[in-house]
Length: 192
Image 1 (spheres, rainbow, N blue to C red):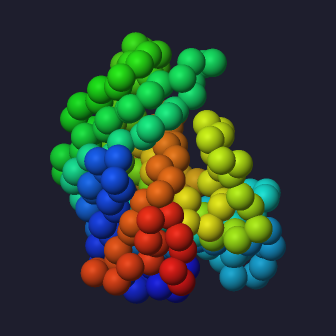
Image 2: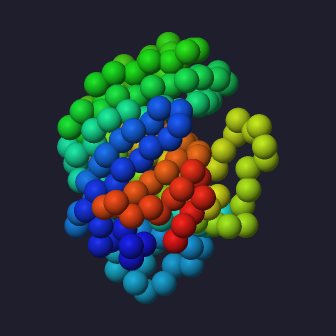
């Protein structure tokens, strides 16, 4: 949490084609460690929310700063597997999406959402070394150490100001994440 709080820009890459930069300077960071302390209470709702199992550090980045591409190998929505989902961002807005399968499922949801859904809204780092995803599982979690999750739409939960009615989060395992050039996650392995 402290490392992110003092950073300026995240660069998220992945062999699957993900290549995204987003600014985080002066953005409040939050840690879901399973304990709500006095300091958490002072941070407001994003600080005193606890997700179990615990083990995440998250933030809402600088609005309008996300540029690049996020590739989500597998995303399940409404019982359908959306494979090879590609999300392109320019100046913090989702400007295009494509997928190898079932694009219509996510597109219909996205197209019927209200204003704010197109905004890149959050970055979440899994930090729990005791949670592991079984090999070949298509069902992932926020909390395994080294998991990267990004979001669009509502980000009040992450300390942001986007109060869109809807939001979506996407797991991108196996990423390398650099903060101002320093590697925090290397190929899905947490280095902090």
